[in-house]
Structure formats: C-alpha cells, structure tokens
Image (cartoon, rainbow, N blue to C red; front, side, top):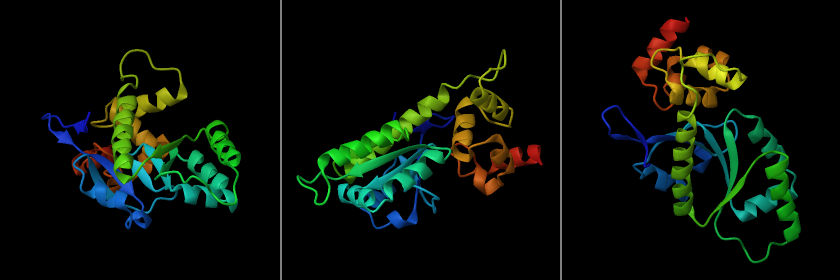
Length: 220
C-alpha cells in the first residue's frame, strides 16, 4: 500500500510531522520529495518524526545513542516517549561502527533490551536515510491497517475501554473506525479531541476544514 486512498480511489499521502530541528537532515529532504508523505514542520514535544499521526520516531545515529546512554539522557527520553499517546520507537540510522569508545557492546545490548522490555520501546535500524524513508512508509501503512481493524460502530457496544472510546468518537460527523483510531492516537483522549480547535483537528489525516468545522459545531 503506497498511501491511503481518497473516495475517488486516488492515492493520498500520509502526514509526516517533522520537528524543525531535523531540517538539516538528509531524511528531511528525502521526505519532502516523496509522494508518499505530506510533510509538515512542527515542534514536537518529544521525538523527531510523527508518522500518520500514530507512530512517533526518535532518530539517532549509533554515536548519538551511545552518547545519550553515557550522559544519562537515554532512559529519561524513553520515559517521555513511552508516556505519550503515540506508538513510539527509536530509529538507529547509519552503519554501526566496528568499535565504540567508552562503552562495552554488552552495555548497548542491555540498554536495547531494557528499552524493549521495561519501556516497550522497540529499537529499529536503518542503513541510511533512504532506508529510513522506506521504513517510514511501511510504518505508516501498518498504522493505517491497525486503525482500520477497529470494531465498527454497530451492534453491541464493546466492553474494553479503548474500544468504547473509539465507539464514542465514531459518533462524530464523518468519523469512521480508521479516523477514530487516528484521532485517539493523536490526541490521547476523547476529552482532548473534543477540546481541539479546527486547526488542530485538520492536522489529523482524513480531517479537512469542512469536517473539522462540522465536528466543532457538534461539540460546542
């Protein structure tokens, strides 16, 4: 799947929000030239890239990863990533050096294991920026598919709290299962969705100005 589809069957790019600190990176330039993504520069509270309003990526080189481990920043960063409403991960970009000074390989493996088990924060690796962009496309596609599998709004009300939240959001004008998932992933709660203004709502893929105005008119 290259991107999401409009009602006319035309491919629609996924949103890719990039923290302005990443503007100098090769990945930023590649994303801007990609038909798969609509790039938006936005200061992110945590992380570097927000893919399709759902997957939050902290991009590091191997040297960055080691430096953050040694100076104590890595695990506080992991905590901030894990506490957010999105699905977080750390992306290690570039070739791994044969030797890293001041750190034992077992320490790196232990750090990655801790991130995966204690913080539920996967660490993915990409060879280069081109490989990172391919991974972003895959992540966007998977996030879209996951949102599309949400229980549809009919029949008996779901019992799980998360499903109930999605059920409620599907009562908003023009909001189906997939969009309900994206809204909940982006804002984190029904309360924050209802409090969002039209501009904030349109930052979610699938919400245009007209739909945002209809949602705001209902919840006012």
